[in-house]
Length: 148
Image (cartoon, rainbow, N blue to C red; front, side, top):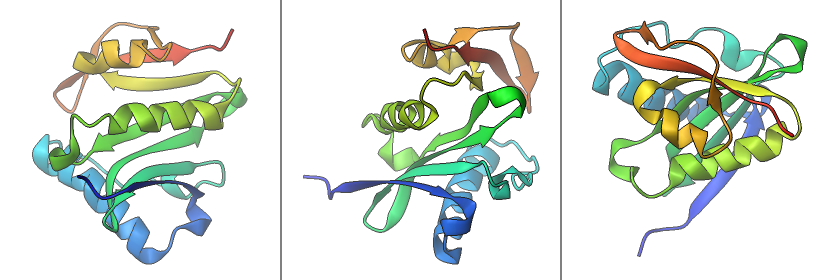
């Protein structure tokens, strides 16, 4: 039996130093190290007042994470969706997307999906809005979800 998993939603101002460290480490472990994409992980958007950080924690450590950014004109942007390698396949990404959509409510949201995950995001109402492109050597697809 797995230890319990706790969902957290917080603006930057409510993150303590240890939590911020652990969230950024998870992102770097997956995106920079595992996926071999050296890029500026600290892009300044984490600290914006409209940014919300969502993560799942198990045994005191984050196992999955995403952030919601407040883009211009009332559009919400989901990004940095990540699940720790040891925790994949347990539905954590889906749980976070579901919670993100609850937080976003009736506002339009966009994301830049890794192309092999476009079908996953499609299950949550996201549809491609442009051609596939390469970012850091990984195919991506821009996607949008507009509530009915």
